[in-house]
Amino acid sequence: MTETDMPGAPVGTGPGWAARLAGQGWFHRLCARVPGLRQIAQAEGAALFEVVSGFVRSQALLALVELRVLHRLAEGAADTATLARMAGVPGDRMQILAQAGAGLRLMKQRRGQWQLTTRGAAFLAVPGLEGMVRHHPVLYRDLVDPVAFFRGETQPELAGFWPYVFGGGDAATAARYSRLMAESQALVAEDTLRLVSLRGVSHLIDVGGGTGAFLSAVAMAHPALRLTLFDLPVVVAGARVPPQVAVVPGSFRQDPLPRGADAISLVRVLYDHADATVAGLLSACHAALPPGGRLIVSEPMSGGTQPDPATDVYFAVYTLAMQTGRTRSATEIVALMQTAGFRVNSGAKTLRPFVTSVLVGRRDEIPHGKVSN
Image (tube, rainbow, N blue to C red; front, side, top):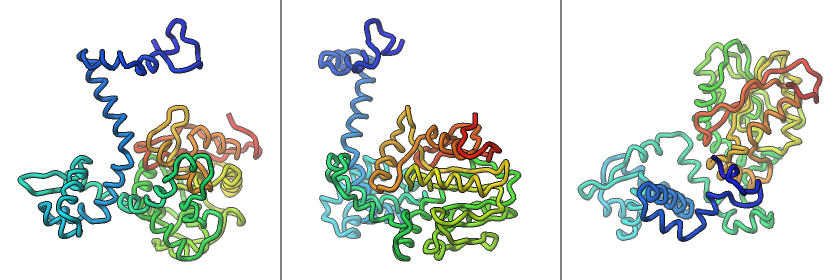
């Protein structure tokens, strides 16, 4: 029986019975005394405190990264005094930071020596994580007054980090963006290629592909595949791609997409842009593909009616601060793809929603603007 099934519980008129019960002090006192309920209450309490302490956790992680504590431990175990000298931090403060790192399960102490845990070693090894953490202070500064931020009363600093989205920015700005994207693209490429079959594809165009990190991964997995990189001239100027990748500079806002491919990929592109721009881009992809051609969309997606903590908290707020696009649900993206004339046979596939989710559509023969069924 669900909350809305309870007798006398009006639908959509306030908290359900479980939420009303959880809001009663006497119920919490009862839970503390009853086995079974006690464990549930403890787990819920821990989860709530994790939410409350989230910012401090992320700042402790940033300090561990910037002070290169984890990097030092990757070289071997060290005591607190050694870490303090290396980082230029007073010993008592380093002890607190190290304890925080242990609380995050990134390091542990054994016989007076700190060492990396499996999670800490993985953090250093996973491509893009360290770069993402170093980039976060920009977002944190934008959220210093979260009420004003959500009211739209601030001018986010993050919006100035991505002027390329509007076709602006110089070579230095493009290089800064490209480095951040390339660092995290390895995981995205890995998950995308695991979820998408390129069997039968002879030529893939990656639109908005930056400096070619995704296509470089595709080239390794499919050496016989013909590949084309399409992005702004200032961006592709820094491309370092295998010989089989043709580089075509251009803007999908102003220029037609290259023709001749039987597949187009949009990897972390749509959530950078507003709905009107996305609709125009999808229509351009439809026009550039032959009948039956594939469109691959890979990016973090909102959970929609089942909000996801990674995408609906992190990515949705991030794209809001960017002021250029938004994090959409799979249902929303499917609707946009269908309107552009693509047939999408399945919902979003994902192994790690905090990395990416994938949708694949095929070009229909239906007139543009009609929705396929």
